[in-house]
Image (cartoon, rainbow over all chains, first blue to last red; front, side, top):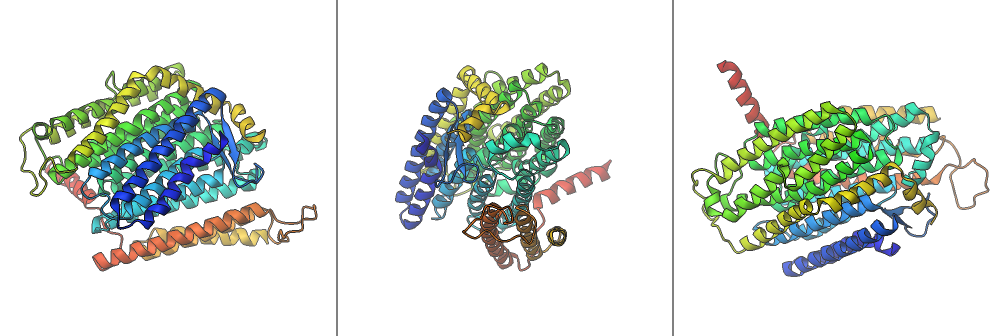
Length: 492
Length: 124
């Protein structure tokens, strides 16, 4: 069973290497990517089943004993996110086959696979420095993907994206140095055991340093403006996968480090305040925008706030709600960006005032947008409702009424700006369609199929919300009381 | 000796941050590499006081050698920052080819929003 831990990250890397050999053969590249993703997904599902039955599983890499060597660990939290991420990746990959401009450059498939490997490694690693390496793998691939095509606009926004991420990585490195100087280890389980001996001021400073580092990656309040600036310029499938996964890797790492390692010591209030500000800033930014992609990008920021609320409460219900919200958010957000990609391919733009009446031309797409938008706004019975309900319930249980009020107000504003997109893109008089962008191009069905698949996944999450929430609750228990995690890693 | 290293780290971070805040992309890249040197040096001294003997093969058991683990971290970090710098330079070259200078360009959407806000203010 333990050997399975290596597969979700090794397989995409090997596939990426093979993929570079077939630059001229797009069909071969497509087959390799598809097979790698499906195999990784199958392994992730097996891991999830195993972990939910027998508890966390860990393995050392390259035979070094564990506190020194790198540990790969899967617990319920990482396995859940790995499965939902790979499902989303699969949908986006299929979408990209139909998308006109996405995989015409041979670099797309290798970079995409490396990105998946990086994301998988971030979820599975049990080592702080290895987490840094995983971030770098993800980021290098994302740098390539975001500037793929190297148009002037992509380069301009790519520079913002690259610089902010390199700075965040260097802060990460700095924080690792401080942790190592203080505790003398970077293994999560080992850290969790030894952190109790660290005096409070140092421990809280270290915890806050990681809030800044992962907050930047996750687009948290004062450091979010890079995201709506850089995401909208990339091509549709690329921005969809970024929107779904990259910030969530930041949130995952924040939750992992603040719970398993620091056990929520003294940073709860700071995270709650930042979470509230993140929600408000994101949704207000979205209201001011006039382009579907930019509106959706700002909404990523506001939704990150919801996840942080759950974490900031540091109760089992709160952390479980945060995990539930992440599981809902990854496919919903990605499917909204896939819809925006189809809008762009049909109309040539996603500006609200230059597109209109798509409801008549593409009724199925309008339906998909409606379902996903209802999900993200949190209308019952869609998946966002379940996520938000669990966060509100956790807030009530903790008697934290201010943050509940903020999150409900932001929810209403989210609905408002989804209605704005609906009005601008799908309702109204059909505008002239960009010449050369006729509907029902050859790839149209592939893209629509991928979008429908992902929207179905979000509806399935709403339907099976009970069992999924129960899994999230167990994951949260393991996070807040890491004794099972520690014993899985240390006493193998 | 440790104090000296700490001082150098502080200078590298200070100069690096100053350079990042410049408009020219080349200066930003130089700032990033200075920052990464600072971070690497910091990692290096996180393993023990400066001036200790290196850890070479035969380990006698007394505590007078430095911890080799941070050195392994630094090696990894150097390789990564090397690749990052190379990528940034390629980006700078492409940006220069496209725009003719290496200034980080204005975001047109932000300029548009700021204009809208200003005009609304003047109308009132």
